[in-house]
Amino acid sequence: MSVTIKNPHEIEKIRESCRLLAIVHDEIGKMIEPGVSTWELDREAERLIRSFGAVPNFLNYMGYPASICASVNEVVVHGIPSKKTVLREGDIIGIDMGLIYDGFHSDAARTYGVGRISEEDQKLIDVTKQSFFEGVRMARPGNHLYDISAAVQKYAESFGFGVVRDMVGHGIGREMHEDPQIPNFKPFGKGKGIRLLPGMTLCVEPMIDAGTWKIEILEDDWTTVTQDGSKSAHYENTILITEGDPEILTLYRDGREV
Ligand code: MF3
Ligand code: CO
Image (cartoon, rainbow, N blue to C red; front, side):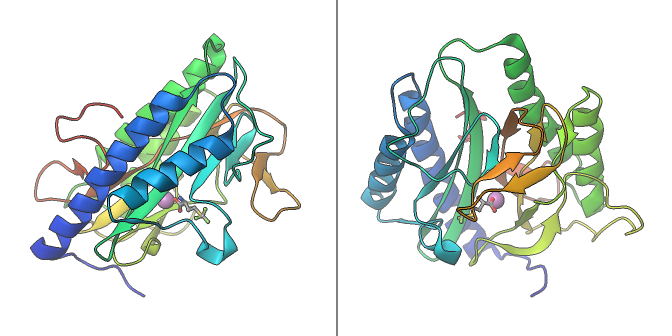
């Protein structure tokens, strides 16, 4: 498949899908506290998504068994919700989820602290989020795809953090994963990447580790952890390239954090 440019009608549909996802993220974010299991978060997310007449797009994707990914501490991404995973004060948790509304996908991730967390962990969360904004600042016509990648990498590495390399962001639309792949580092020897054009809808999603960028996948074939056991944070939004500033579709219209 190649990179698609969405027409205004398609953009409106994606916008609506993203708006609903922002609401679900907001509600799930309010539930994060010590004593809550990731299974409860998953149940509520699926219930909310379906209450909008939408469908969770992670559920059954390549056999994935839940509606959200809930990735605690050293889990980078793809943590499978479980009754046994109960949040404790001091944990950090990445919530990644998406939905399909009227044929169009949305996808976004946030990382939260549970109760009081350490200063280092808060720094990791803040830098991961800011690295997204550093990347997205470059997401405009005239620039190239790897301008986004390089900006994310430069910012995150300036704090000594590891930028996960084996997993990338992606285009989105009628499919959850469309071209192009969007690395969070500048791929060596691959040029500048495609030229960015208005109407592209992209998921930019830095996954940043406190230690090494190297990861491992556990026996369940999903849970992805840091090789050195250091903590990891994830932040993602679906964005739209326009003639001017990029639009962040999975934040509320006033840009308020969700
Ligand atoms: N949200 C992931 C991404 O950003 C996809 C999750 S894989 C799934 O690409 F199986 F959990 F759906
Ligand atoms: Co994604």
